[in-house]
Length: 265
Image (cartoon, rainbow, N blue to C red; front, side, top):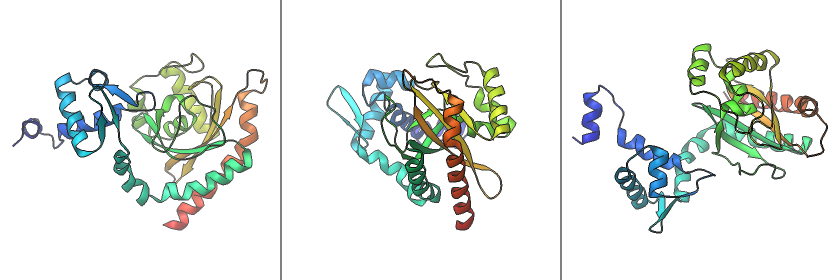
């Protein structure tokens, strides 16, 4: 029995720590950290340099990571880890044409995401122009608390689940908007009551968005859809007025997906 397996068994857990740590190493790479040194990886994963090195070399042997002796980065083989989910899930497939039509109608970028822990995970996206410094694609993650789709998804969670997710705390990366858990609780109640969320330059300066939930036939929320809009330096249009212009089309798009989901059962 391996040391990790023995540790798991002794603790009464069926989890495999080495697998969890290997996945942590993969997840440490993102849009802001596409290439990192061994020390960078160790710091971001809270692993020792020796442990991080073993995982990086193992991932390199398996083809998921490449390195030049100093810097490491992921390879395209990592995409295979998510391919099975994306290829078997009907949700992204149903959403893509709807998002394309929505984006064409409102002339703005449109996206869909699901909740993954305290983050949102993009599962589909159609962009018209670059309005963010950080690139977004399928698989991109952002803190749910700072995004319109994240707030929609959080708002419709069961109270106990929501509080557990909020335990991680809230930050205000741009200095705009919500900065405390108490404020976020109040906002989530408002989002659930009105059926949509608006975020104005809280994730990134110059970006605002409006999101709505996508319901399954049983009434549970399976995803969120949003429209992202740029904010020009001379713009005098409020976030609520800007959202009002695209909200009807966004709500129609969400209903289309819901109807398609019901028909696919």
